[in-house]
Image (cartoon, rainbow, N blue to C red; front, side):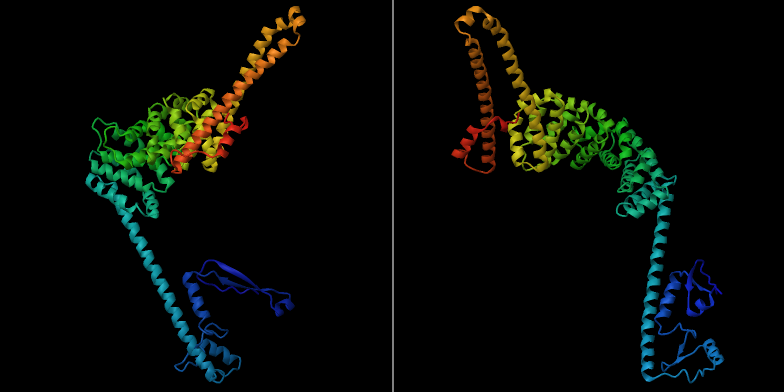
Length: 519
């Protein structure tokens, strides 16, 4: 039969016991064990290591000399089985020593278990106290006193700055809506406290970022900027920082881009009034980069003069790589490519970046912008050639990073195709014109009677002259590119300016063929 041991623990574990007797009887016996709680499990461990504390006769009791004494229940069972409890309880001296050792080990284990329980209890108490503190802070955010709400916002700002769990808990308790509502206050201190509290709540938490936008914080921030009274510079910088954090979430990008935040960010980046800190400029540039990732925001960016300003700022090494990242996003649309090509000196500026060997990231991004534009527009390719891109690309294929080399090769391939078409078109057009002019002459009786092969010979001579002119132009272009590259290499190697190339290098320039041409 199945014996069920009842306990105050809800779940049970069923264990099958197939002993020899049960197998012979054709019956299977089962025992149900409790699924222990934490304290019950620790008690079982203590019983297991207490040297026979849990035996078939129940838990034994040790006397002062370490001799085990049976419990009353065990004594009754032993007497019923005809066992002398006093006689059968005696142990050898070595057994007594073992029993004393087990007692000391059991006491140590019990101390450890009690210590663990005490630490767990203190940890739970601390969490409960922290939760109560957060509840009080959120309650103060809903107070009618503006001063009290400002103090509560400052507490949220400090509490949410470092602890990610606190950010989650504060948002669950409902801290975000009252903080967004505080943006309507007139005091600049309250506005700043609420802005930075919202900023810290959104750090590394996408759910909080979405909740902040949903609470209407973006439109309230823009309302502060567009107010007749110029906002405090600290308020403007806090708003820029919030736009940077909120725009990192993809679902927020179209909302912020269409809200009118782009002109404000461009104005902050340009810093025409010289009141913006360098950190705010960096935040504005990074926020614009986040927004430019979303294609629908590109039209809002093109409505400003951002592209012209970005190209003018490419000399600033602290901003250049981020600027080129924005341009890389803008060239993904036809409107963006047209806007870049319309800026005066856009291609000379971008071609110059290809020579920045100390900044591989800038080289890679500039080559990407030029590669996309060269692939899409014949006019842009001609402008690149006029800007002297050929020598820069040749150098980049030799000295650039792996990615920059690949992109430079792609641009060279586009330019080579154009050059081949021009050469074939010029040669074909001249050949047709020559044939049209010489056909009557070749067919006339006078010409055939005097010199039947004269016209053909003259056509061949003109063809050779034409091809020789092409070869001369190609050879001159190759030599010019190699000489320019050599000058740059000499300059960067800190060699004397009057360095004379070796005869081997001269032989390379004279023996180069059209296979090494950039186009």
